[in-house]
Length: 212
Image 1: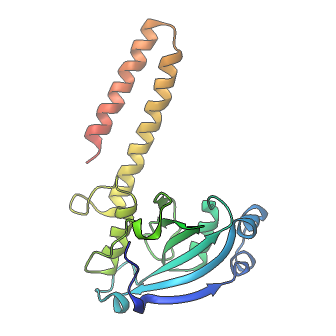
Image 2 (image 1 turned 45 degrees about the horizontal axis):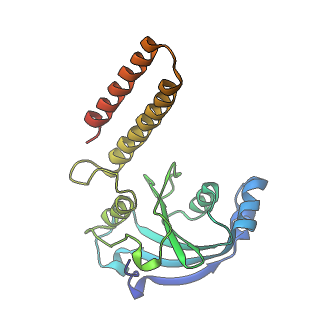
Image 3 (image 1 turned 120 degrees about the vertical axis):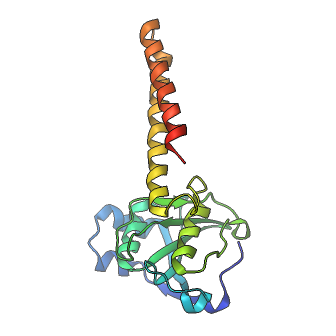
């Protein structure tokens, strides 16, 4: 990944306590902040001005939040608290030793709650699959999510919101197939085994035709 333009740099440390003292969080989430995070830095501010793109209708600013970890991975509930505390679209850059992971959730508006986070694998910074593409801040933001989750349908095929719903349906079907295959393996009766096989095929066909 090429780093973000110099004029987007903000580099402002944020005390962890700011989140769990100002926002209603459970003791378990507070413990995650204390035990899993070494530091939080507001690394970049991506806006129409700093990126030379048009303002978005949904995204006015996109903030890059770098979180250095003390552990292997960060609990999503912590990301949700930070997302709630900063009313902009956020892109999390998680740092673990020399490796990085990008996490980003879709927000319908800048104050919407994030339902699901899309994540890259852990990798060196320069290998992260993120390029700034798009003419508006909405497009830049949506393209980030599409680059992180390569299963999502392209912008030509459907909106990001539709693509995310479509992908959630795909994952649901994959889960159902895996559960049925496990059942079929354990089933002793040939008739029931055949019925399960038919059901699996039906779901597989639905998955192929149901996804764009």
